[in-house]
Image 1 (tube, rainbow, N blue to C red):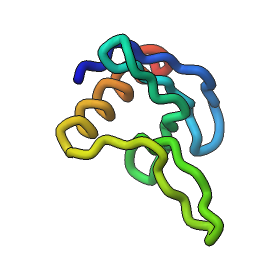
Image 2 (image 1 turned 180 degrees about the vertical axis):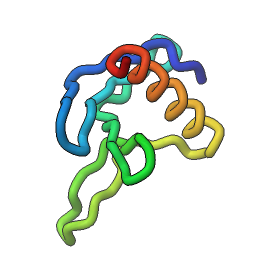
Image 3 (image 1 turned 30 degrees about the vertical axis):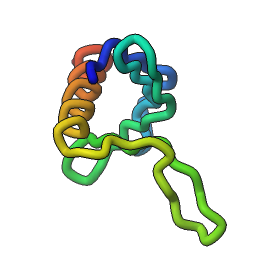
Length: 86
């Protein structure tokens, strides 16, 4: 599976939420509302999620293996830094 497009739909200058991202795979499948979060020591991705009746959050879509998760985070954060951090 190849990442073929990364679009930043909402970018914030302040607060922990830095951007909402849409990622397209193989020009055929898109995942929207991936969040770039400013953590205590680094930026990280939070996958789209839904609040459950018990108050916990559950991912709606997420990489199953570490290889795709690492590639996704690396590619999205590199694109974000190139576009918005000088």
